Length: 411
Image 1 (cartoon, rainbow, N blue to C red):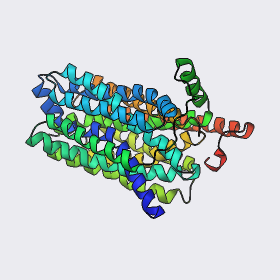
Image 2 (cartoon, rainbow, N blue to C red; image 1 turned 90 degrees about the horizontal axis):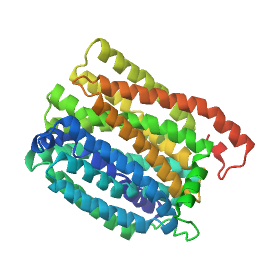
Image 3 (tube, one colour; image 1 turned 120 degrees about the vertical axis):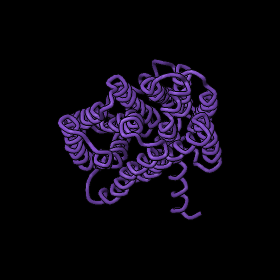
Image 4 (tube, rainbow, N blue to C red; image 1 turned 180 degrees about the horizontal axis):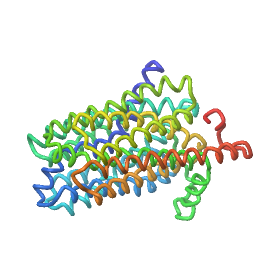
């Protein structure tokens, strides 16, 4: 197999692994009204099943990081995805919103291993100066999921019922697991010298967290990437109840907005030839702050038409395909021996921020888009503030101390 062809299949499989959680988040969104009606509850309570999923991902990634470093990539990956498949089947059979919320948490605990493993495998397989491009290509694969998942979920819900969404998720994940086992490189092998005792695990996390480059780009990137979770949590109610679109129409709206991330991911390949990752992140955050302020201002003093709101959300979401891969690459760049732990902390913070954002939108729930766009503006603004204030710290530390990788090339 040619080297370029091999690289293509590796990226495709890593992207497929990383899409498990996005599919799990997006595919059942059109079913929120049907789930609420079937389980005799309200949409805002169903939204907490989304929050519980984010919490499960955040906690699970902290577990899998040390496990992936200690036992290698394959064994934890297999165990986690089996848990995901079993939990998905139970979600399909649930008869109460409380049970759904609990099982979504278990589903996330299992499925989140794919996110950590995919990031760690990129660090294993690709040289450090190529990871931003690799993450961009994986992000492109991931970006297809919000185009397909809600659209498929809308038609599945309308034709055979929301329960089948979880059965389909279980089947897709089983297929991805089999393909990964047989065709994906194993990556970094087991390291018996790494202890799984709580003190040792916490020490590894501390060594990662104390690195200034990791902290700046993880915090800034995590907050800015949490902004779309406000949109994800609020959009089913806003579009289907306020603007009265159908499940199928909502799926197509979600797919159109997903094109924003796909397009910007493609642009990132071009931008990286002329700009450094840090420059791309800073300008993109500034752009998102401006767009989100416009969203808030018009929502406060007037109202959005359906097409006007879709257009402005599209503009805002264009930034996600630029921020995600670049902040991920800069966060993980300094680490070789603790890539799993670094990826776990990175993912845990992002999902924790997403859980907080989705819960906040649920608590502030009203028929207006204001809670959604207000939280999006807050995330982008604080992310930019962290980046600007932390940039000086990263540069000073990079000059004063030797680091594990030459971060000056990246910064």
